Image (cartoon, rainbow, N blue to C red):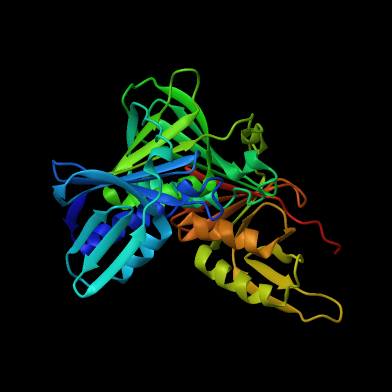
Length: 376
């Protein structure tokens, strides 16, 4: 095998393909990136760990077609460090020689015949705006659990009904929901899929800038594989098995009390007040007519408080939150004002965004946060 490729093109492709390689692969070959050069001038790089696959196609000047398997992380590090010149790659026996300008590297090959076949990309299900997907996944994934002992909650539930996709995630302490519009190949298409939050976040970040993202869900024998494709990059992922808890019903039908506060001002104040909050201790928000007072710390410990202007509809109320969970929700809103809906001081609080102080709140993104009980 022999080919020449531009350094930046190679570095981007190898880095993207190798990004999901396992740190401790169950088999040595799974630490490799498979490189296939065809006579038509296409270089295909792929990786697979039996759960997530990645394949990137780039143009190259192929002089001798062939296939080889090399260490993915090492090739990624080498390709990023090369000078800005064309890169020549040649297979010599059981070694791969990488030459770029005055730089020359020799890598050992791995047995390509032992490498597993990548799963076939399912048939196209629909397309979604890359920017919209990136925004939606970022908003929802903040609420997904990081605890791998609860695999169901590490996923993001995708509910597809016709032209609407609803993303849901929860870690039992907060719940995020985001609705977005897409273009299904079949207008009446319906499906439910539970995708690992880490995988979905990675896909949204790496493919979202490509304009349109193609989404493919397996249909035969139930949905168990999802695929994404954009800009010559393809990735598939096994879905998480299990029945996701019925979390939609946790959102209140109505909130008799609500408050509206400038989002940025509330975030800044929460960050300052949280400086004195010891680990696992909350910050308190006390709403009264025209203001909200944030405070943290008590007794002989350091204390802080700050008052902000706020609009309150309904009776006065005080709640306490985990500071980081509060900031995660506020940061995900992306609007100038936050509307906080209350039913009871100890019941979950619903966060929605609105563009003006007296405007309508948006229902496309909802963040539900369980308050922490505190002694007054």
